[in-house]
Length: 274
Ligand code: FAD
Image (cartoon, rainbow, N blue to C red; front, side):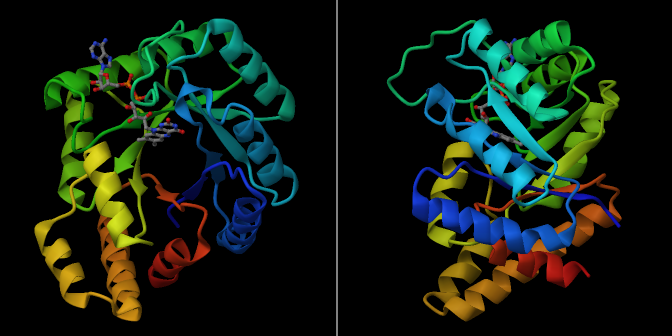
């Protein structure tokens, strides 16, 4: 069975906390290897991520893994967070640059995720398994795909143990990315990020921002299904399950699900993979 992992975001309100509890409770039954918790850039969820990591560990029994984005952070802030995570028993982190909210000037001690990886290696060597982000369809700010691949390689050379990709709906983009990375000498596991579809309008907006392509035929099919929520759900789950099957058959070392703190979209995909 291919290992799976889940990603959650830190809730900020009581309603969101209850939603996370429901989703985590239901998804725990699928036996993920770990559950990661995102980190808001610019410090906005600085205090929420550790709390969510604690809840997922203590209440839901997950091996909870914090994301850590370095943009805007100082060495001492990041060091203190890593110490806190180490003391909580975390043994894995997802190291990112992150994005500053628009209009906020860049401050802080780190420029790129590779700098954060090097920092973790130099100050916490052996304490954490380090994951970094990869972009099968190229990071939106990269000058070109090859430059982005070289920057990806630099994160691995700085000490990353593995990578999780941005989501995509075109399996060939992932296979090509892995092949190109291997050709450059990157040997760490590259786990595809999978985005089950919960809200199509939201997904379209988000995909534009992060540079993930939704194939035209999928857009057209979704448009045709219109307001038929049941049909949209079925189509979305079939689409993502088919993608997952291709990824597994093609040798993906795991599947990392972006749950958006909802059990149903991810659960529907997993039910189809049994
Ligand atoms: P980097 O690897 O630093 O790359 C950023 C850009 O800079 C790329 O275009 C790269 O090509 C370029 N670059 C890198 N090095 C150099 C160099 N030396 N010279 C010139 N250009 C360079 N965001 C959050 O805010 N919180 C999260 O929790 C979070 N989790 C994520 C989890 C995953 C699995 C993924 C795929 C993304 C996640 N993101 C998260 C989004 C991520 O922060 C953004 O995509 C961000 O814009 C880039 O982060 P990075 O770590 O990939 O940056």
